[in-house]
Length: 151
Image (cartoon, rainbow, N blue to C red; front, top):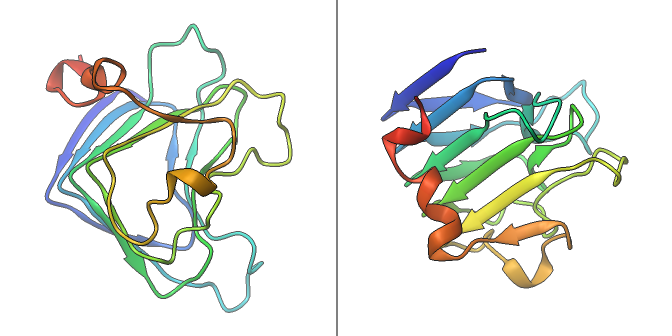
């Protein structure tokens, strides 16, 4: 919960290792996804954002980061609660990212806001993303690129 700003971090995990309901800006963050030998191989997920309503002004923004690791078919995020909001901007994504990118957590009715903006790498594949993913315009991405996002 709350407002956060993280810079030049290295985050390592397996399932839902970035989670909660806060408003957070991650700048120059390296995310390293490792497999869980005892876990479900279909559950390599980076983020589970817990926004419960689209009227709540919160979300996670990742700017100028990198996603890599040893796991395969990693989801960028999943709809843990009813209205998650997560945006990756200028993020280098290795081939470990699932082609669809994101998971609706088998609940497509959820009001997810998942966005990508000018991401690069073999895992950044807009053409194969799930239909509910937003490829953001300059104007749509702007609020997620500045420190004002974390008030």
